[in-house]
Image: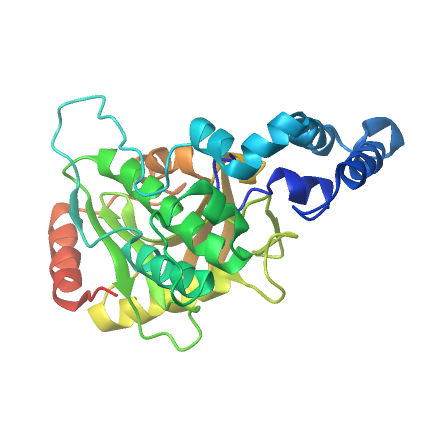
Amino acid sequence: MPRSPLTPNPYEVLGVAPTASAEDLRRAYRQRARETHPDTGGDATGFHAVQHAWEILGTPEGRAAYDRGSMAEASHPTWATAPPRRRQDTRPAARSYGHPGGWRREKYLKLIREWAGRGALVTDPYDPALVRSAPRDIRHLLADALAEEATASQLSTLGIGYTLWHDVATEAADGGPENKLDHVVLGPTGLFAILSEDWGGHVKVRRGELIGDVLAPGERPFQGLALRARSVARAARVKFTAIAIVVPDDASDEGIMFLGRMRGMHAVLVQRSRLPGLLRNGLPDLPPIGGTELFEVRTRLQGAVRFV
């Protein structure tokens, strides 16, 4: 089972329905192998994905095991909880408020049961076989909840000099469907508004915004994040140093990519493993925040922050 709920399952990789006959499956494999082979204009990543899908579905026994979900459950942990990050030291952790990923998990649980149908018994809403059969928008909710939890785990290692707020409500009219900030981080290097995302594929930057086949038509993640950050900034009478979108390490070609300024804030695309370093080191040429200013900004945020 793929590590992300949005990673294509073997049937999707081969471009066939789960009900396809053995002959249709074999025909689809041969066609996809030709299309993705590097010698015929494809790429190695796609070709390897096709080969892996065939390894799973290419025999009646393997396909039956996958369809029953036994292979999925044996090769992937349940998505009920995010794996905890082990602390490497004994320093006090960052102060944290709110429930990272909680809003999206609640919405996922509601929609997965509605999608299963009235009267259907859903004993495990995180069962890999159930998740992989759900529509993409439902799987995306779970993927983003997991992304938020993974980011929060990284943030918790920053130390006592940092304060974290998760699932912060905003009043931005065009700030996105959930109208919230996933994380607000305050520390000596500044005040950051952060979006944790997993689109299930690769993203790039063009003209100060993210692009990629995995994004919805018209989706502008940085624009939405900037609007939400400004909403919180106005309510708390503070100024954000930067807005940052955090993606899985394999979703971006660069560890940290600076996009320039957007609505008065620096915009950054960052791989998840590089986020703590970015927040500890700060943005280039920006001075650290003094203790008095930190205390004042923290006090204003504590009085203004509301959670979704």
